[in-house]
Length: 83
Ligand SMILES: [Zn+2]
Ligand SMILES: [Zn+2]
Image 1 (cartoon, rainbow, N blue to C red):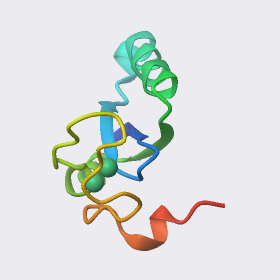
Image 2 (cartoon, rainbow, N blue to C red; image 1 turned 135 degrees about the vertical axis):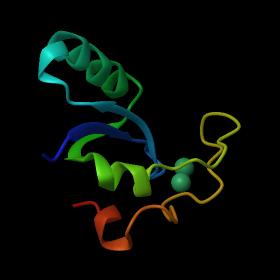
Image 3 (cartoon, helix red, strand yellow; image 1 turned 180 degrees about the vertical axis):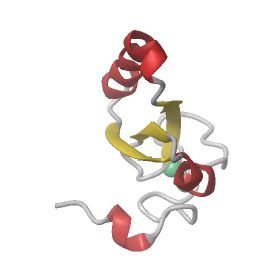
């Protein structure tokens, strides 16, 4: 069975926050997602296996301190195109 998670994509294009979509904890999941949105993240829902490979583990020293703005190596290029 595929598990899904919500991710928060930072303005720099990196996935920097995630929460597993657990129906048994829906209220808590919504709170987490709301906190990602408050931080300015774009929310996406994807399979947990994808989150594992796309999550950006590189250090962002401070706000705007992305080591690779708009070009996260963990994220497929086509997925970073914004309309
Ligand atoms: Zn970044
Ligand atoms: Zn990154």
